[in-house]
Amino acid sequence: MKKPGILRRMYDWTVDWAKTPYGEWALFVLAFAESSFFPIPPDVLLIALAVALPRKSFRYAAFCSVGSVLGGAFGYFIGWQFMDLIGMRVVHLYGLEAGFADLKEKYALYNAWVVAVAGFTPIPYKLATITAGACAVNFPVFMLASVLSRSARFFLAAGFIRVFGPKVQPLIEKYFDALALAFTVLLIAGFVVIKYVL
Image (cartoon, rainbow, N blue to C red; front, top):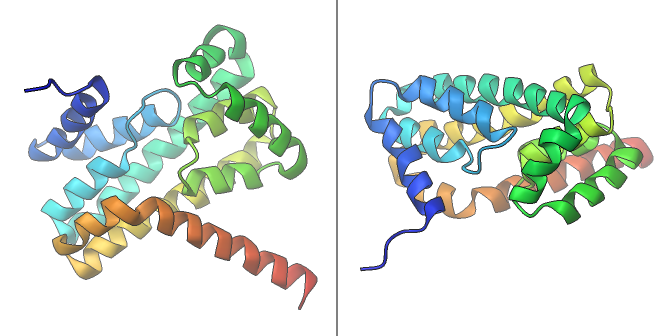
C-alpha cells in the first residue's frame, strides 16, 4: 500500500486534534501558523470540531478568527522587516513566486481590498499577509480587512454546520472555496453597483 504524502499526513494530523481535549487551542495555533507559514488551512480542523459539537460552532469560529488575524499580523511583520531573510523563503517553499509578483501589483492598485479578498477566498492568506508587509500596506487598514474577511470565512463555515448539522460536512469540504469565491464576487459587485449605479 502506498504511503501517504507529507501533505496528507499533515492534514490527518491536523484533523486528529479534533479528537483531543486541546482542539480549541490547536485550532487557534493552527490558524495563527497558517496565516504566515503553515500549509494546512484551519478550516479543516474548524469543520471537524464543529461537526463533533455543532452547538459550539461559533465559539470555534471565534478562536479560529482571532488566531488567524493575529497570525496575519505576524505574517505582515515578516514581510515588513524580514522579507529577504524569511519572507522569500516562505514564498519559495510553496512555489508562490508568480503570486507574490502579482500581489505586489494588486496592492499598488487596490491596497487593502487585496487582503479582504485573499482572507475570504482560496488565495493563500500567508502570501497576502507577507506581501502586504513587504509593500508596507497601511497596517490598521490591513488589520480591519483581515478581521472582516477571516471572520466572515470561518463564521460562514460554522454557520452552515450550526444550521444544517454534520450532514453538510462533505458539501462544505468539497465546495466551500467555490462558495467563498462566489460570495466575494457578489460582494464586490454589490459595492460597484452602489458606487457607480445607485
